[in-house]
Each structure stands twice: as structure tokens, then as C-alpha cells.
Image (tube, rainbow, N blue to C red; front, side, top):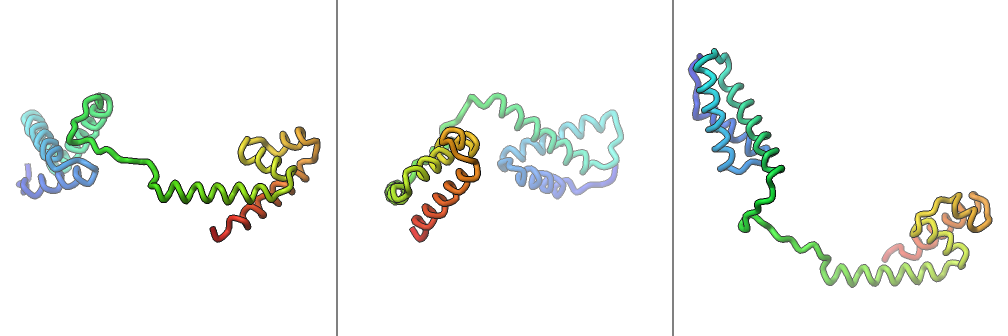
Amino acid sequence: MVKCDWKALFARVKSALMRRGRSEHDADDLVQEAWVRLACYEREHEVECADAFLMRTALNLSIDSHRMQARHDDEVLTEETLVLDTRPSADAVLLAKERLARLSTGLGRLNPKTRDIFLAHRVDGLTYAEIARRENLTVSSIEKHIAKATLLTTAWMEGW
């Protein structure tokens, strides 16, 4: 086997593991385990490129560890748990309510048939063909109603 700068090699492998999301402590453990496996393998086999063997072994151990942790993720340490408040801020809620009130006013300015067609498509998720059958109109006229409603509501909301 060729002489190797083990300290530099261990640092490169550890760095590669940390770039892949491992903590410093976990990376140290994985490098050590990979080195032990390399030493055991060298007892019976010749290893031409120890640095590649060590790197590949450490990365494979990291993948195996991640998979095992994903399967056994029932155990959560309190100090590792981060609680995030995903609720919107009071300002965001107020702004959304004001925007909704503005949109409601804009929709109220549409003629009733156009508003019903627009809401049937955007809110109820009906296709143009379904709305056309329900309203006894052509698909082309449904397209025109929706385009008109879209333009008017967009113009109404613009700058808000």
C-alpha cells in the first residue's frame, strides 16, 4: 500500500460528509467506522487506493445511517426539536382580510351571470363545458364571461 497522509484524508472525508448534511460528531464517527472497515478489509485483500475506499465506505455508511434513522425516527430528543410557529402574523392576517374584502367588492361589481360563471370555474372548479351545459350557453361565451371577469377583477385589485 502507498504511504498516505491519513490526517488530511480523514479531514477530506469528514468534510465531504458534513457537506452532505452530517453533523461534525456524526462525520467523525462515520470516518472512524470507515477506517475500521478499511483496516479489516486490508487484512485479507490488497487495497490499491485507500483514500477512494475510505471515502466510498464513509459515504455508504452515511447513506445507511440516514435510511435507518428515517425508519426509526420515533425517538425525538427535546433539545433537537425546533418548534416553529407557522401561523401568519397579525399584519398578514389583517392584510389578507382587507384584500379579501376588496376582492369581494370587485366581484360584487360584476353582473350576476358573469360572477356566477367566474366563481363556478375558479371556486367550484367546473370546466368550461360543464358550466356551458349548466348555463345553457356555448363554451365560447363561457370563455368570454371568464375573461371579462378576470380582466375586471385584476384591474380592480391592481395596485392594492
